Length: 170
Image (tube, rainbow, N blue to C red; front, side):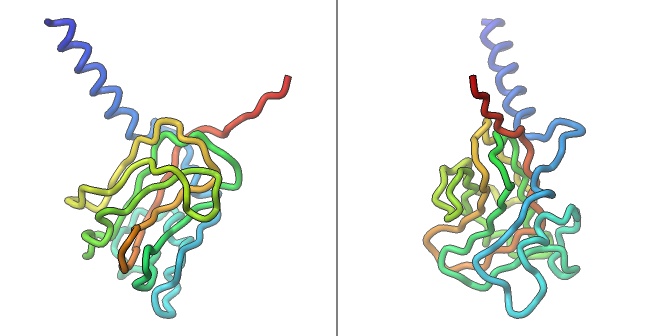
């Protein structure tokens, strides 16, 4: 019985650790190129603001991306090469509107059209920062998509942690 409890504790600790970046890890997103389905009005809140490294998550200060109210809005990161993605951290707005992110899917794969496998879905909107454990999903593109509804998509920061995919030829 004690061994079973210890094993369960160890598994839950390893899962919790997995969903946090390793100290000193490099944020892959900073070197990528971001795009999104639209830009909100004529504001300069374009997709690249979500990978600028700023920890400010109040949209009013100009550090967050923001789309118009699109059908299935999306934000996409081209990481420029394939990675095994372990952890993704998505920061939404702290000033309002977290409910807009509910149901947003984090997708990773090699298709530039957002039709990639889902790592996870935002279900908890109790706080602006959500971490996802993607367990080494491989891909060049990471996207955040709100499927099936008209919505605004605002993302203040996206962090991606993982390792480059290395192809070895024998």
